[in-house]
Image 1 (cartoon, rainbow, N blue to C red):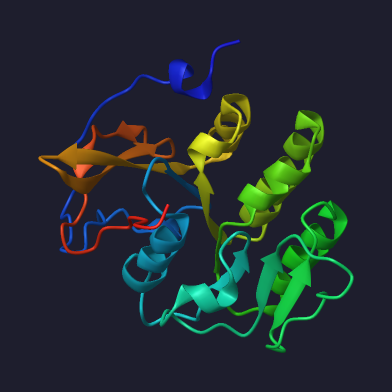
Image 2: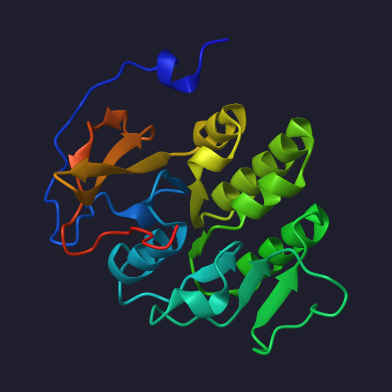
Length: 232
C-alpha cells in the first residue's frame, strides 16, 4: 500500500521568513496535528522547551501540557498552565504529585488518558496541546492495532474540536511502523537530527508539510538555541 507521502507529489519550497530562533514562520498553531520527531542526541525535553518558549504566540492562553518522559518540573521557565497531565509509569505509592494542578495517569490506561484529554479540551480556554506523552503510551501498548485506534481517536478529537496538538516523540526508540503511523495522521511533521560539524554537534531540521504539500530539505537549526541532550 502506498504511503501518504508517496501519494502526493513532493515539492520543495524555501521557508518564508525564518525567524532568529530557528523556527520557520509556519505558524504551528494554525495546524491541527503537528508531530515533532527527534533522533540521536536531540533531546525531547529541550525540544519541548523551545516549542513552548519560541514557537507559539506569546499573547495567547497557556497551552495544555500532557507530558510523558519529561516531568512537569523539567519544563523550566516556560509558560504556566492551569492543568498538566503526566502520563507516566507509577506504582501504588506515587499516584499523587506534589503540585495540585498535575494529574498522574498510567500510560497503559488509555481510557483515562482519553478522558483527561477530552475533559481538558472542553474546559480549557487554550487551543493548543503540547506534550511528549506518546513515547510512554507507545512503550505501554503491545498491540499496534490498539495504538492505532487510540491515536486515530486522538487525532479526530483534536480536529473536530479545532484544537492544535503539538506532540514530540523520540523517533529512534520506537518501531518504524509505529512512527510512520503517527506521521501519517499529521498535518505537519518537523524532523530534528544532530550532525557532527568539526567536532561540534549541530541540529538540523526539515519540514514535511502535508497540509500545504510543501517539503523542505535538511537545514541548520538556530546556533544559539540547540535542543541537544548533553547527558544522554
